[in-house]
Length: 234
Image (cartoon, rainbow, N blue to C red):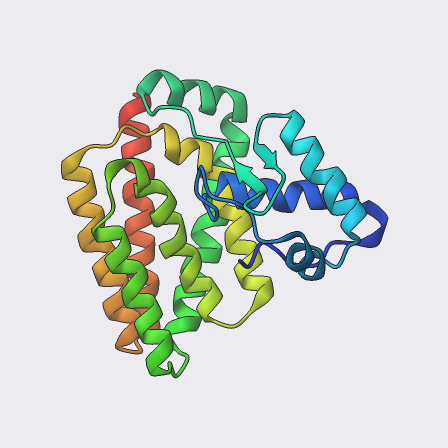
């Protein structure tokens, strides 16, 4: 979980809430599943367990988590994205504003293309190759209700496999900025099939060690998403 990086001491509570919201809204922890144990979360975020508990309590009050006590307890994710649809898409775009929307799409294009280029130029171990293929397989076999979450996992895995925490964090941030937007796009079978072929092209270019082909494949995929967005807004 690249999003679970240490927070700054001056804004520990606020940044802890932000990190946990990233985990929840990106689907890193699926609805109904529980967050990692308190001890692990506190270590990864570099905070006290008191601060962590305050952040979890705030997210519970906001309806994102359900905290259960006892042997099988923990903080369980209760957040589910709104149902996709053209009306919801227009609302998300209106809430963002045209300038922020264009900026978010530009930011995502830059960091995800860059991550694919870096990974394609990196000698990969057999384990890294297996992870990338596994994320692709998970996405190809996903149920419709799990698709966006596993799509996020696939895209973030590219950045995480580079071994750069900063790059992985930037890609997670870029994805979060458009997560509501992506969740609102209606799921069309023809689009899912087209996306599947684009995902395969991205993985093939990375595994072949071709940075330029990897960049082009990611750019084509993201441009396709932008075109679908314009189609539903038109």
